[in-house]
Image 1 (cartoon, helix red, strand yellow):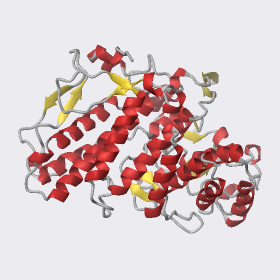
Image 2 (tube, one colour; image 1 turned 180 degrees about the horizontal axis):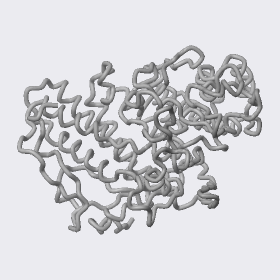
Image 3 (cartoon, helix red, strand yellow; image 1 turned 45 degrees about the horizontal axis):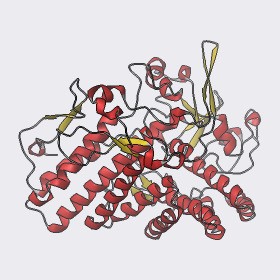
Length: 485
């Protein structure tokens, strides 16, 4: 990006001791004028979209941690233990957490572009409209992530009277924001998606630019939002539109490309980067391992891992290769450390920058399946589920799975769809949000260090399924805590 595109409205959002919600500090001397200037500004904000959606996986029951097996155990413990144990208060000062500040910085710039659309020079109407549409999508997506981190799940509260998060809808540093209701936030997200859909005109970006929103991403985000709301008809309709445009799935029986690779046939929007501290390979040992609970969801007998031929019910190619022996306990998504007898996330041991995924086709097959099931359309629900599974299991295992699915009633099918979401999206930033919007189960985790064992418990429907507003944000703006409905 050329230096002259550093723009006065590039901001540092600082939670200071003042009573403003945002403290905006100019960092340049040149004001955006041309379409190229505004594209550079938007590109900068795309690059700053937090990747902490995947960090939510540490709060799930999909992972266990063992810092002793890491080459950077002391720092990793400070950075991640509090997240894993749901310690949101009095956490270590070095603890990684979620980027409240970053989401609002990006929304501020999206607002700036929307508000200045009539002042953009040296750009066609189509180019300006695309910039504005992407800005509406970016604002919608930032608010969507925030409300699903910092507010109760839409399906687990009374949205019209439940405290949500602040809506930032203007690029005005004088605004002192208060929280809106969960319903108001979701309504605004949907309005922004509708607005974006009216402006965007790029059907599909070429390779290298797929981090940008395109027309189909409006349907994709609307489908996901509707799923989280339990609006089954809308989720189903929008997911079908996405599948019509992106029907292809990576076949793990034949393909060497990971589905969450930005070059995958499944890739729709390659914006957010996977968390990079999860892998284990020859150069760097990570600390995150698949939990026994998740492995059992893959129907593997954990007690048989020491045997020459471990006992597995199905050959799920995400976890296992076609031949089952201790030497073959490695799938497309996960690998096996025979010395530690632990499974680890495999893909991130390769080119870390390739694994960028906000939307990919598999998600919409599963949304369509779940929504169809809730709409009592068992035929389509089962077919969409099987369409994905045939690409993830070997042929024999798929045939047996398909037979079981065809015999399932609505409740059993609901469980199987959620289990398949868990298998497909583990450690990819979906599972925590699925737990929040569905069962909010009790989770127990055991942490061992120097022979000492400590158990941590997240109770069913625990308040910690919702993050508290950051203390530094409340200190900067006490209005955040004022809530009347």
